[in-house]
Length: 228
Image (cartoon, rainbow, N blue to C red; front, side):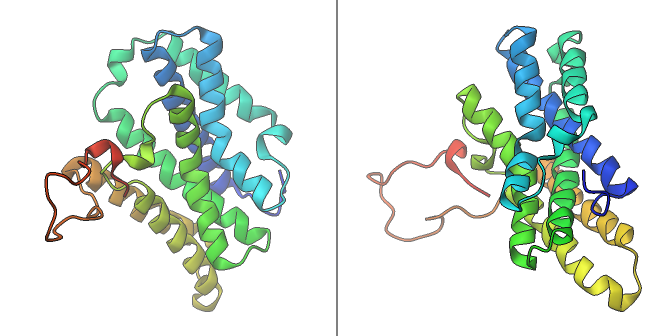
């Protein structure tokens, strides 16, 4: 990977994001009682999907092709999932872990885009893409509702993290702040929002909420079709 882009802080965030998303992908396959090969595939596409799309869009070398550790982390995570009962990952533990991965990847994606000369707004969008697309690919391949169509704040948390990363990196030189402080603050804020959404089931208003004139003939709304 481009040594001018990644620092030890971003390297750590990268590995955290990859491992967490790879685990979520492997567990989807495990719940469907698939083979280890399928679990490894889900772990890989979930772990690297968002970063791959980002790198293709910003014209950077695809990160996991040039880094021998990425695929190893994904397959190692799948191996952990293979030898552990799915029930230990049930509940909100994995949701919080996914929130950590989401915030980590949003920071990494936007910071890398800035380092490659991408303007601020597209760079923030690269953070959102890095954090969310792997989960979207996982859900589409598994044939289940996409994670971004759930009512709780998810994309919003990634957007907050990416926006704070990009904005912070723009003003950090004027304030004399190191980049690692900006990245840490953005990560903490994004994860805090996602954790609050998980704990208190927070979500943005859906289209049509509170509008007068809705009747029973309107298309019914369910939690699986909300987008936050």
